[in-house]
Image 1: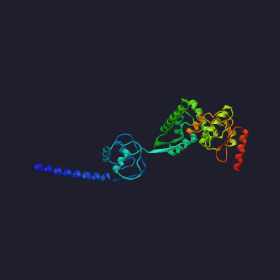
Image 2: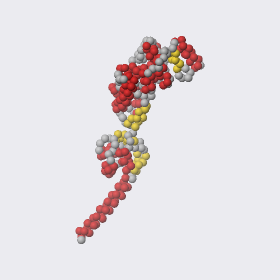
Image 3: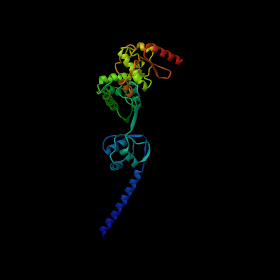
Image 4: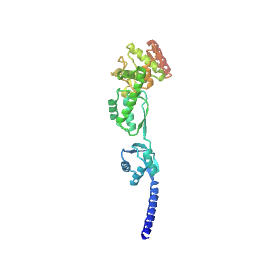
Length: 320
């Protein structure tokens, strides 16, 4: 009887303790956690490793949170979009297993040059321009136009090597698709010539509709061994947004000066859109040799130098 009475007392004590534990745990999981950043970086590894990393980042977590997270599921790794504010402990731990990866959105516009784009990218993403540029030189086939203009969604915190590898890989895949469709094969040497022509079209055309006509002027001049004499070719590299002046035309001794040199520049002068590439692959059929921007912001095309001079005079008169 005494033993039975003692067992009953112990059982009651255990139930009381269990109730206290459950009540304490219920209170613990509702303790609010202040989240000061939109994103949290989590390492790869065990739940214990994740909790330790969060503790080092200033989050007040304990061994209890380790057990809770084990029960909830495996935490993700990388930079996760958590959201600022205050949330209870259980919701926070659940976010570690279900939050989406934080992303950055970057855009390369058609006609921009490699150094300008990489410098802006380095500044925006707090990356090293030297590492971006070095990885581009190592991974891209082309000195310029190795990244297709587009808007890209990237994992936040991506390093320079993976970022460039990702952009170049996507671009190469698209180049191969377009080349296979139009040419039946993808040969980098041949493709660089088309990219170079497309880059001039990109710089010179006022809009996408003009591109095939600008392409026809380029091909017609090349066929006649005439200098292209196009200002856009001097907007290469660091000169992307620098106005081309008579002084610059006279002094620039590079292969990009199509006033002093016949033929194409040594390689593309800027990033090129698919529209510009399509124009280079499929130029309009024309005998145009000149074009001049008019007062409407588009170009007047002409067959002869005499006609071109009339267009120049008309444009000058309109600007007065």
